[in-house]
Length: 291
Image (cartoon, rainbow, N blue to C red; front, side, top):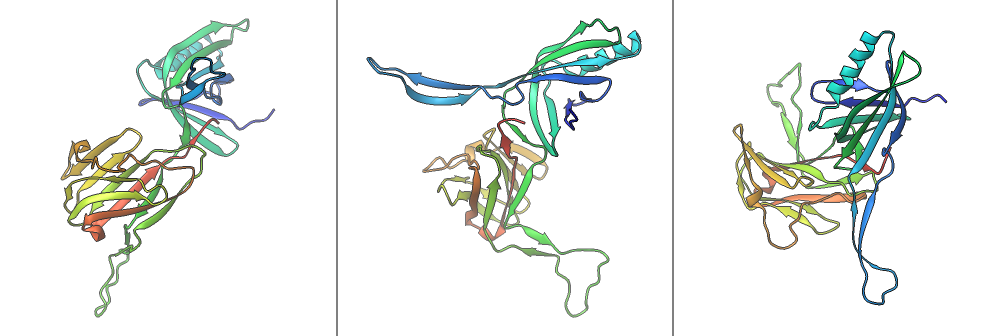
């Protein structure tokens, strides 16, 4: 059967396409199915059980394939390339392309490459076991949505009319923005509060769920605060210096690390003071059950 499937594995130093000679992929395990753990309790004389919670387990993955080579020297070089790619303790990025769709997942080595001689001297089998602690596949690139940002108007060649001047940028008035999560799974996001002037207590508000994320702090022009709702981290960047800002979270009411529900989401950025000086940049990736 003709297929356009491509599987590429990368670390910080190297990248190898396993579906391209001298490598082939004969079988993949764990690329589609997820393992779910249902936590239940059963009372005295109860039929069945009561569901307490459900957890998606880390994704166990295995790749089985072959190496093709003309000489033993070439075979050893290709073996070494796999050994140097699938290193223990290092994070790997697995990129899967099929049918015009590219999805990626991060994984770590569970069992390093194992090689097995075959009856054909120019062919050698290999298999690798991996685990992905974040079990969902995601888009290759992040999606960026900007709220109340400045749209640049500065361009070259630049001609400045003597009586009219020139517009360098336009500040969007709308503080509301819709975001579409195309997957059927809740997705975390990374959003950045950017101050163009003095801002007091910036906030991102989910209009649909009435949840919000608010910081009790003052921001100056040029200051940025990055919130990662998946990793649950808050970091401030000012004049090239970065510091942990987790202690500035407003612990009152419905304050939470916001996530994107499947489908349409509506967000509003606001602040106690300086709302007109606040921009919010939201980055996210759709997540998928499998490939």
